[in-house]
Length: 307
Ligand code: GLV
Image (cartoon, rainbow, N blue to C red; front, side):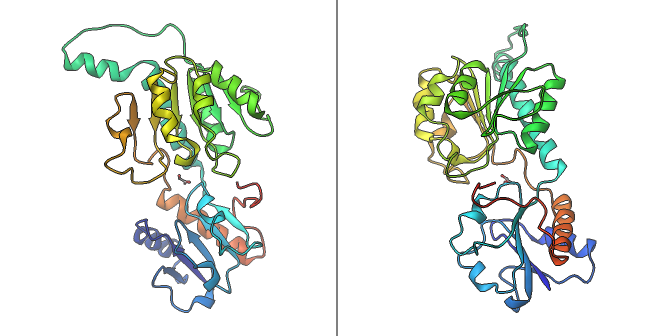
């Protein structure tokens, strides 16, 4: 019984060290140094190499090294019946809540404006009268924690998901029309959705045109949620007035990409909520133990639903 870490684009040494420290003697292997492949019964994956799953006959379950499982579910070699889980601990959600709260505040209080004022040695005292209204696309663990953080700052929160069900304190919407209605209501629209066939390209010209003039779009889901070309013309039209993007269709964002230079786009390098080694290692070990005991992995997803 061995655990394989297959995440070639990530620095996995620290994760392997942490797993070894937490569970001395455990058989932890890091791709491509994977040894006898038939001994591997559990894998932690992120952008795993092509064809990997068809080479692991003893695999009982796989988990994503993070909250999103899109990279695993779209793998053509993933066995249909293999349980897939995710490593999404409480810190992942609280980091997301901190990011969205910070970026909402940056927009609402116009901190970029204060930075310009400072550069010009200009004393421009002002503060907005009302808190912003925020709309969250998605109502999973990260969105729920984000909603609580925003509500603690007296910020009205709307939410949108498939079922229209969410916390009592959040004004919920669902369906295509519900999404447009929410976009038209809020000052800050935040995408916290998982990437699925239903959510790919969900932020397109039509939705952006429904936003309030000067509103802010925050995307911390996946780059593919946004039709990138549509955003540039939408910003030209002033709806939204600003975009804060943490995720992109191509990452790292290519140097030649027009987003880098855009005065009303703020870019962060997919860091809103990244897997924390210690938390991920503890969850991965717990998940592995569960799988060995014949139970489902932690955070098991429904492949047909995509999350
Ligand atoms: C990061 O984007 C993740 O899915 O954990």
